[in-house]
Amino acid sequence: MSPKAVLSREARTTLWRSLQTFTITRIVIALVLLLYLGLSVTGDGLRLDAVNTRICLFYLAAALVFGAFATWGRRRFALQLGCQIAVDLVVISLLYLETGGMRSGLAILYLFPLAGAAILAPLTLALFSSAVATMFLLLESIWQVFMQDRQPPLMQAGLYGAAFFAGALLVNRLAARLIKQEELAAQRGADLRIQQAINGIVIADVGDGILVAGDDSAVFTGNPAARRMLGLEGEAAGFRLDEAPGLEPMAQAFGAWLRAPIEGAAFVTVKPYQEDAGPLRGRRDQPVHLKLRFARVDTAGRELGRSVVFMQDVSAIENQAQQLKLASMGRLTASIAHEVRNPLSAIGHATALLAEDLHGPAEVRLLKIVGDNVARVNRMVEDILQLSRKVQPNSEPLQLADFLTELKAEFCETHGLSDDIVHLGDAGPSAVRFDPLHLHEVLLNLLGNAVRYASKKPGSIRIFPARDAAGRIELHVQDDGPGITPEVRAHLFEPFYTTSSKGTGLGLYLARELCLNNDAKLDYEYRFDAAGSGPRRASGRFVISFSQPA
Image (tube, rainbow, N blue to C red; front, side):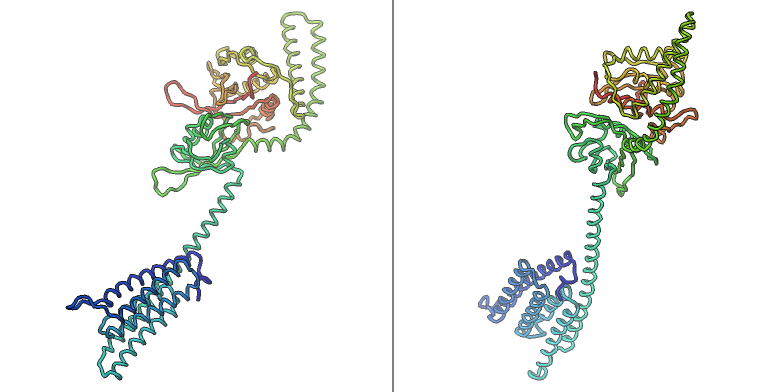
């Protein structure tokens, strides 16, 4: 029976390769027999035995033909094997008779074709070949007894026959077990290839980014989602996280996890960046906020470990959550506009009437504060309506230095703070395109949150401009209070989400929306600050990223 009907491609390849080895061995045996039996040394020199020489030359020619067929004519495996074994048995039998039978010792040559049949052929063919060889030895011995009146070693012929059967049976069982093991290995290999193909499809199509990194921050591979999130060109491999300025937040989070592996996630913000060389080039989109999870890979004791970094674009999730709540936000803004505007109008009218009768400096100052706050609340109502309609206001260039100085003075006076509590960084001549009243509301919201948690020590609240990796202007608001936890950070800018019993959950949401309406971005980021000459410490801060300078 052809093995092609029952064996896998890998097993069939192994059988053909074994058959080629079988033919090469036959060629070597034919050459040895030709030299050993075809030539004999006499007193007159070398003498050629014509019969043995012809048989050995025929055997050598047949071996070459069989080798050619086994190499270039891989068809009908069973037929080729059967012909080879038949020729082996015939040639060995002829040489056995020509050299004197059992006394020549050539009976041992039968083990070669019988072993080949046991390895490459089914058990039936192997036993049949053993039976043919045994019957030949026994019949030859019987022929000598009855026809030539000799006493051949019948016992030796019987022992050879028993050895043929035992060897064929043992070798065939061992070969069958090896073939079965190879079939199992081939099946497992096929299953593994299928699983790898499935994993490749899943990793390529999954929405989350996946990076494989070493303990030295070297990135070995990444899926298309990771390349898209990080703005990589080409393959996500061949660079180190700590050598890419744009990916410094990721490198810091990964290094912190390596030093203290804990469950949970880390949140980082990858800003737009521009690299002159390497894989990090040409990123021009908005900052992306990523949720990072890390998993250790079992590398079986290798010195350099591997870790998998799972990246999830939290910005997209936040936007989806905001869209779900935007409908209810629209209904709320309509209600606020109706319920708040009327009282504001009444307060403003009453303030105007009082201003006609009260002319003292203290009264005028108080009435001005009331009027200014009425106007501010009325503008907030307008802003809420603009947010619901996604109106883009017109903005003029705004000088940050003068604006921040006036804001600080107003904030400290309103909250009764000393002037040294709020520290202003040097803004220089920096100017941005942002509506002044919008930026005023955003910063007052952020400073109001900061003053609740700051220690009230000098410099405990900081407002300072900076530039990102792409050269864009940023405005940082930071305090020395406890940072926001990653769990709270995941919902920080969602409408109606608050951790304060007195809050409405709209402050940071409105602040971010005001920034978006001015083509800017408000986010909470984890950064590392240098504490003098000591080690760097992690801190959180609110960052307003302006799209472009004025």
